[in-house]
Length: 125
Length: 263
Image 1: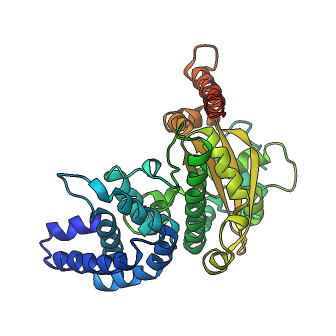
Image 2: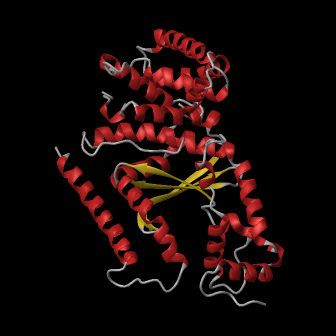
């Protein structure tokens, strides 16, 4: 989350626009893939990475925003992931199954760890 | 001709190497150059390796969940961000064996030779861990499963994905016997790339990682210097004992996990 924090501290207002655009994009993606398997979502994410890089700042910050928005869109500090934990896990798992860049996968691991999103809690059945 | 130093001392060895292997003259500067070249030329191979290890992680975690039936769960930690050449990534440099470590290994290789010395001309074949990384597993049992799946990677990853994302990888060699390395047990594998590059991947448990992190400095000291106290009760002896105790504990943990998951 280093790139986001850096822009916030610099007072770069564009960061809000980047996150807003990213959330809209994620809603479009999940409208089609929320009910599909993580393998199918993974294939889609491999090509979506470029959209985030182009529309959410630049390469590195765009990748970071893609991951943070993707996983934490289901989280509130009041209720945690609540009923949407399976969706957050699906997005995390899809990142790891995808052929997104290694920076994206590294960020996905960091965010999952930070939000205590443990694959061991998931149900593969 | 300077005498070969019987105990490792960098300056003495460098002097011997420069004289005895004339084509390697100024070995220290040349090693630094080799290391820099390796860093610049291995980026795409590291990216491919990261993708491969991530795919094996996802596959093996699913399998572990079924096999261990909820006992001794956990996740594999595979290198992802560490492979990134981003300027703020300090871990990238650690993937490459340091020039001092290479010199020490050359010394060990040449200690009992009188010809055909290990040198810059055969560095890649003499030292296979010039680039190395690791996968940390919840237990040694998980590590074994990961090693087995890594060995069979071509049957696990879809052929179109291999062609598109992992085409640089030539073959993966896995030693399926956990070997003692620097005081801890690990599965060793060498990932060979079509470019000729070889990257060593060690697979070990979280317990081994903990032992490794506290012992690294002491082990290096023990290995590089003579005259340290190694008798009963010394820090070095206790360290080795602890490594063996942890290994025994891991084996017992795996046996218990098997017993508890029997139908």
